[in-house]
Length: 119
Image 1: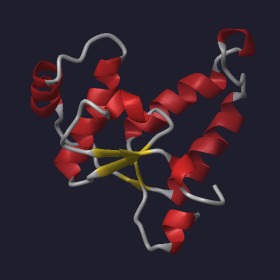
Image 2: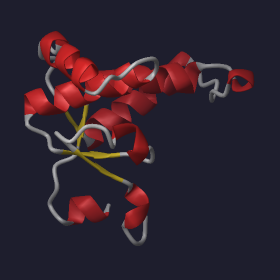
Image 3: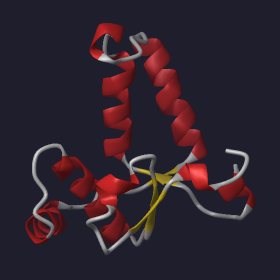
């Protein structure tokens, strides 16, 4: 809410929504929330009302540049795709609890939401 009060535009990518769906519909025993399809859809719809959805642009060339330049591998290649989307759409900062995962990308700034009082 702090960022909204400051007039910041908050974005989300389709990839964020796909990854969220994966986690919230996964069984609890697999570190998920085990929501039903209807509950998951309601969550996705709610997020889409709160955030501006970035367009699905061709990202492969930018992604390949990033994973090569920053030697990303394994699970980190998913983060590189988010960074590619940010670069292509002119978004310079990502709000994440996993700032370290994005520290390698000098092209963007990773901001931990815990640095904002009242969040």
